[in-house]
Image (cartoon, rainbow, N blue to C red; front, side, top):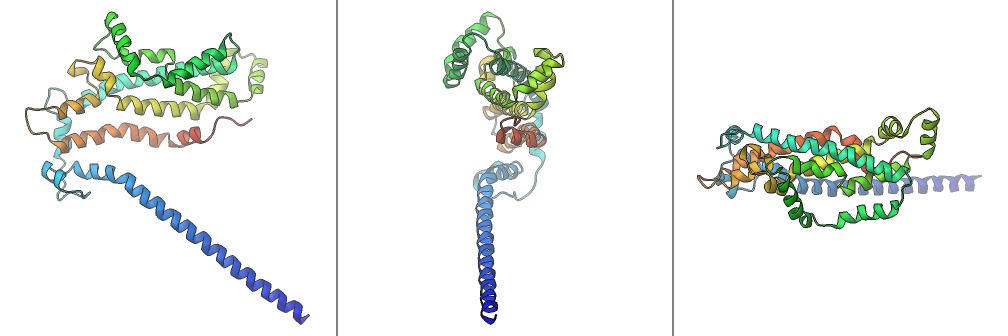
Length: 302
């Protein structure tokens, strides 16, 4: 009995040592991982933090200091930057941006959902060929279509309007979004379609009442991506918009840099750039849960 008890005691001590060793390894790995993630986050966030601090600095301090915090906090850069040196304030440019972005997002969602629904749920002639042709457009540089589209909209007398910036989205020209939605449609069980048909739903009611609610994460991902890309778009408005009163924020910021009549006030430009980021940041934070779900998952699990 004594030997058995001794063996049990030794085993307990060994197990206790092994448990402590495993816990120390887990603690070390977790600590090391969080240190690396923290350093990476600091490196990624430093430019944004520097921009925030630079918006309160003057030109001399911006170009001579790499520190984040300014010597004094001067909020006049936000006031003067918003007023601008033209007859229009940045509120006009923000409204113009929304006039361009909101229709683009809405048309992209509607056309992409309908197109993805057709490819994933209906058997039409040459469907595989048409799908391949659609996906192949993802490899087509946009610069190839700039001149033909410009000549087309010129003949239609649509230059210096916002129509050329979102007219193409009526025809689901964003192949990436269509492909993303098709993957979500394909993971939704067909039994749901059959049950809805038994209940008397036609194809449109099935899409509107049954499938779209299950597509919420994917649709929100489409909205976020298109909103971010449209707000950042510079080349499109530069080509089609010629009137200053119709400039979006991207062109307004560039116009402030091109101001050769006086010294460029970089603190004002940086301040307006930060304000221009706010709509995208607010939209992303408000829809972050659905966006992450849309990226991580691939739809409803059958």
